[in-house]
Image (cartoon, rainbow, N blue to C red; front, side, top):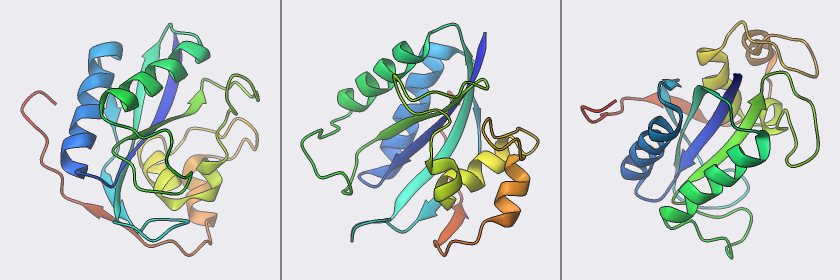
Length: 164
């Protein structure tokens, strides 16, 4: 079984879409561990604030099937693939790591956003503080302590449905 970390984000009907994403991940992977939910300003464009969190699951699916599944879930909740890269999203699911795999195809792993964006690194450091970045060998907690970019991010209370 491979341990995967998944970034989840939404800035359109955020409560609904975050809940839907976690429910879909639970249907496909069973037990899913979750970080806290964080709110952040849109990065790269002017838009509504995002809710972001990181999920952890174990899977037998190969990387390509994980990526295809995440796109299917996004599409089922109205993800507009024709929209600009930096724009509002109903749902954004990104595979951050797949065990310690380092690759460029079928997707870049580990995902560069881990060290670039606070809305990925902080929840990942919370969920897996002792986990080691596959390229640097530095723990996510230490990467978060060293993080110097100026991105506004804060934890928010989140009302999960009874099925969580």
